Image (cartoon, rainbow, N blue to C red; front, side, top):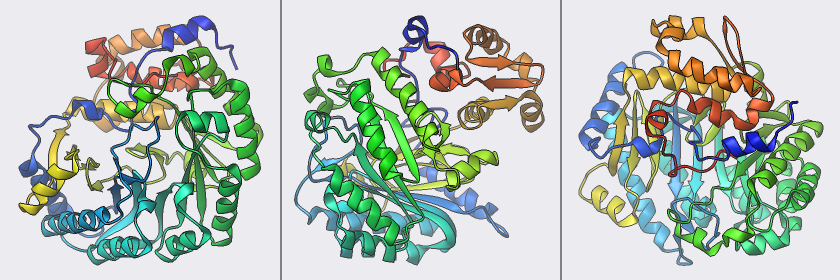
Length: 460
């Protein structure tokens, strides 16, 4: 692999989108309203003749018992468990609105409960939620049904309840095993408890266990993160999500409790990423791309080998590039060529539902240009390469003519060793994977037009 030079680090130490969608959520507009969302659902229903592609479902549970200083999620800090009862009532209203316009019994092959902390809900409340979803949708055998788990909120008995409810994949939020880092971000959890829970998950038969890690947190160094990586290798989860911390205190109030002087430098963050790649690949993990690793027999690694990898609002996925129904406060969904987002406050979300309205408050109808660029960006982000002919045939365009300015920018990236250009297509190099967001940004019409990217996290 080529050497990552200080000059290269300096050049790409800039903000950029994560491309869980294109266009990105900051492009959503309030002009996209409930009427457009209903029309989109009805269009899907009218087209659902024969065997339509299964849906994905995302349910956002916003509650957390304590505040993690790094968190940029939409969450509500409370120890009052009774608040969840009213939220489940509103989720029922939202699900019923969907089936009124979409129809009942659509197949679902992927379900994800995120947050916040989904395990804030009691066992009975989780049962209530799953019963609700099964009453309105068909969760098909062999699907991926996952839930985010805060290790501080579960026991082996709770994991057994999750298994009985039909979940077959767990994602544990660990972030870092170092006590000094945990203290700096207000998330203390002994490594021993995580190891015990992962062991229990295996005994209970969960198909895949994911561990979330974050590099770039306060008090981290490349050496301290090496120790966390060594513990993760002993833990040997099926998947690892390795995220770069995005320090945006002007946007996310909890991050103001993190002192900027305690954060590692850009060079240290790149060292953590480089050493993580080396350590985890030597341990037998397949580097899926950007922030995901998986053992070779995990479905994510298999999907990458077979060219079936996709990227959606939850990151890399084996789920086909289809419709995502998003439920809950602030949840973002995709139906057809539209994106939509629910109200971000619990009050507005509940008020709209109580009035009989969808809680959709903004979104976007994608243009033809958006759709073409999305296909290019996702090919880069998921496969690391694209063939001009495939894009030309899919969209009836001439790639090199339409993207002539972008091709000139790619020449510069080629000179940096990040991509290889040929008569047939574009290939991201091993070095380029460190900066794959930067490669994808070349094709982002909105970013290129603005030259102002402070709204995004940094690429490294």
